[in-house]
Image (cartoon, rainbow, N blue to C red; front, top):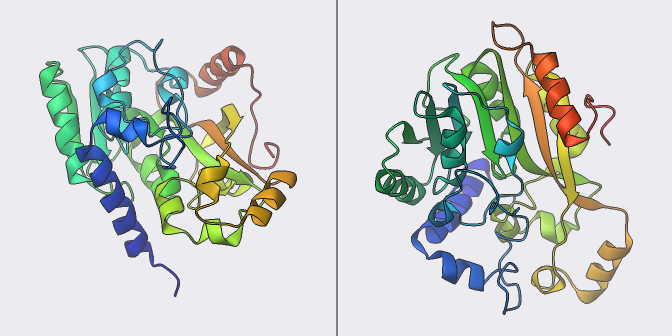
Length: 299
């Protein structure tokens, strides 16, 4: 029987509640980011290194991301920033460093345990302009045209209705605002057993869609100036794959051209008095060494 959208959400909620209430050391020891053990979890295999990022808070980093969206988000002093799927608060705290005390950061997460952990982290650091709200990013608990910038790190792939999330991002952004989102996409097809595995959905893999489809959804929501700011291939270790597919299926997957990728996507909402989106985009693109493209040219 096919898993429903609500069942998928509950799978994700349960798994990320378990992660939120565990310790970083326990989580990392059981992941392929751990230095001494075989990889047993799929949640940490995609994360980027935050050590050189200003505003980084180690206690808020659960290693669940797949990029550094705040690095490309062009957050300005005084901006209102929303972090989708804010977890324990890591990207929200980095964004707060950029927006400064005169700005505001709102983190949204639907896992109660993550919200509690993020709020404790913010309180410990005295960050009174960082707020965490529990809610579904398909129906964000914020008003229209609130945010200057939206960031998100490896979250939309966990949401069944991605088209609705892009519509919500468009709604809550101010005219002229923009987003920078890191996420997992596909070039080609995953083996059926991986696509149907609930654990792999919660681990960001089987919930991913084709890259061109992802870009088309963003464009269809009304965004312009789409550009892939960064992309990297994701390698899933054999001992993780072996939990779901056979040795022969692993070999066939390795030999094929199908690929799992992490991308960081920038796009802007038309209009508004902010710095012209195309000028901002050109600056982002020049620094990242990437080229501006739409849904038909980033394959």
